[in-house]
Length: 419
View 1 (cartoon, one colour):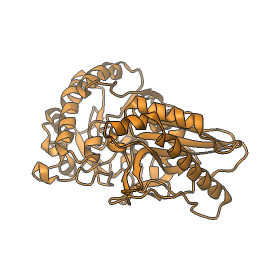
View 2: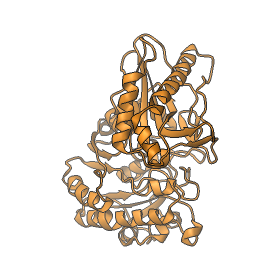
View 3: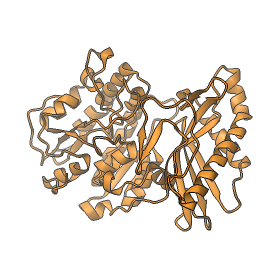
View 4: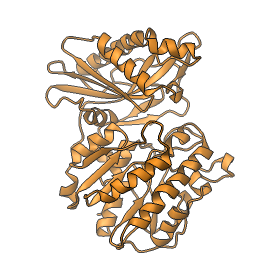
């Protein structure tokens, strides 16, 4: 799964998408040998995230099963309380200057992981909310994090708004805002449920108290001295208080599954469907090509019937509007991962390459665009497509129109009537 790989035509690339502009001889060879499709991941008006995209590609329709990113993240970090009440949120470590009213929702992506860990430790040590309500907090990926509120006795609800102005809630889905407000929002309940009102109050208290801790942290004193923006505000979004109810992957398919993922939500998904999960990402300072060369033998030696792998490379250049870097990320995957993997597989193996969502460079956010997919294997008849890309995939005959149909098509040759 090439995270955020799908895109739209980019003026800087001469009207081509990064897939179309990149030199991808191995992906193109797969397209020539196999069958392609352009997949709708969730719905025309719902931009997927990596967790909902993965859920769909594994055959679970997010439109039916998804309960929000927060619960999967919380479960994946072991923050979820099976008894009592839990609400979990996605978090951004942000930088907020109330005088200039400048909000950097991702702290310029330059927050060192050690500094992020120290901020989490300071918040955990110094913030107290309520003797009856606990919280768990972690950071990862420089600017991302997870927050969970739990209680044995106090009812809590995920029906609260985001404080992150970059996302609005549409049911369980967090939908990115193309031109977000430059001001952090206040958490409010969606309805008159007392549990939602309590949760919103707790969130606002936590955001304010953690901001005070971060503001006086030595971490931010050093950042200011270096001319960097302080990481002084936590933005929360994607609240949820219910885990999805999902049948086991083996129960549904007869296959064992191993997942290699980069985000806690994928670990949570793996727990729910009975898959083996391995956290897999480049080590600090490790190049993407070196990571792919290290990862490949592990995948080939994995004893599971089905192996799912999440490659993050193309996504961040899409978010940051760096199309040439996105092209380079795609080319590195093609040369150092897809090519060697395709060469190592046997005639009995099936290989699928696709995306969890689109991250168009000229938008900088996820979009609900169709994503290209190609499958090669003994039960896949070749079609006329000879290139891997968004436009080329539209001419494929793989038979799947939605991402949640793809696995059924590969296993049975039918989408099971799902639309």
